[in-house]
Image (cartoon, rainbow, N blue to C red):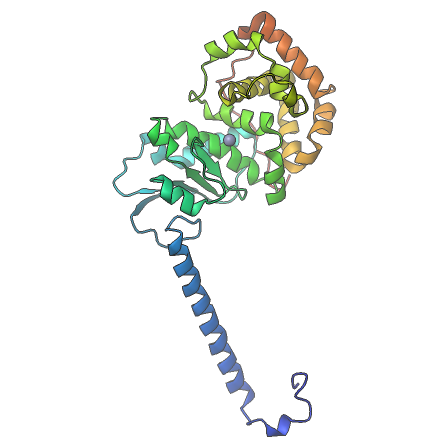
Length: 312
Ligand SMILES: [Zn+2]
């Protein structure tokens, strides 16, 4: 059929056999695809070899295990625990009772120019690591080496985000950051992190701080000083451990429900725990006033658990 506008002029066109014409068209498509790929490759190199889909990464070495790859600047020595990243991912899956179906790439950024180039909107000094909303790419920022922090605990932290993100939509991944006490609390808990304040410091500081305002986003404005993120992270972790200790498997069902529908997190909270967030936070704060050390041990992730299939 002639294209619109050519009706009636068909006879004036050179007669090209249909098969040959199809061949020309295929060649045209191939050429377009090749040019597009070349343009994309040139554009990618402008950003450096660190975009998730970069096919070649000059200046970088890679450790490929079955499910997690680590890309790092040539000459960097990887800590032993990062030489078997699949084991860390399996631990993350067991901890969260969730499976991560898709492979993950962890990229160690060598310096700030590289970080700003590849993550122009996200990279900021002070940030330790970033997981993209797909749950498939993790960037470790130069902050970690600059401050002598442990990259393994940051990889664990980000694997928590990655496992959760792989069980939600990209929209859900962007929404769950609005529930930081849950998303970050879980990540700091699984990360077993010591980069913030110690438990000793937390239990000493907590009775004098407005723990309710640290946890409940609606009460954040009540804080009379700046938000101390180092205290906040540890507070969130202990609050999650407190809930898990009290509610057991219902806590994990709550986590999975929020992963699926982060915008419904307050309703989910009430549904799974038969109380509101402010009620639970008040109980937590009271416990900290009287006997914080009696809280369930936050640093001991469960060693066994059932993985929930991704579709659930
Ligand atoms: Zn985080």
